[in-house]
Length: 254
Image 1: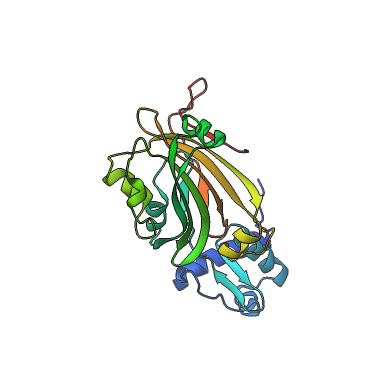
Image 2: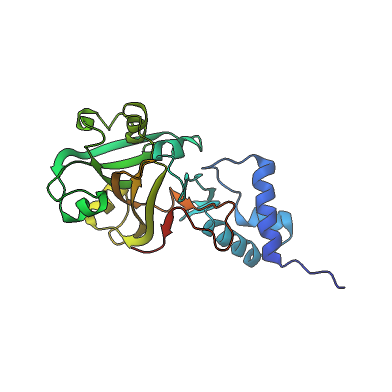
């Protein structure tokens, strides 16, 4: 059987990954110039550029126009089939989460929010809108509607300084093991673009969902627009076979 010949772009892809490891390059570090790499590895510039494009698409590298190619920022990964909270997810990759509160206010549920939280229209809720940051860089704009019946007094806490997830867990003893999420793509409007450092109309993730307690009591309804270059999602499932019920929903479109 004839040996499979490795395409030049595949060889370049593997060479770049090996170089990143051997050179100990970290996020934000610049790769050598293209000519340096092609001369060292004896490959064409076409093959090298194909490999670079693939690694940029995978968010391993990033291109900065006129400056070169750099190791991309390691993005926090949120498990669509779990609920660890934004702050825990960001800390898991060695980064620092923070928030800028746009508003935090006591409100009453409109028909849509009431339906999501299984409340009556006009029931009291707490509404919190924040820009979530990673190492002081804007990552997402998140709006959360809280069922205050299960966490009375939550409006008194300063969510510029503390995590909502930690407050629910530590102050109220509430964990949120159940829920439903929807993930799709949208485009930012002018206000969102300004807060996130994007251009109006740029594509972003749009996430929305409801989080519930062990007893299936809805606690929060949330929606967020999220920069895909700074945050990403994955889904892991275990012990799932044909005919078994999937316990939570992860739905692709709104």
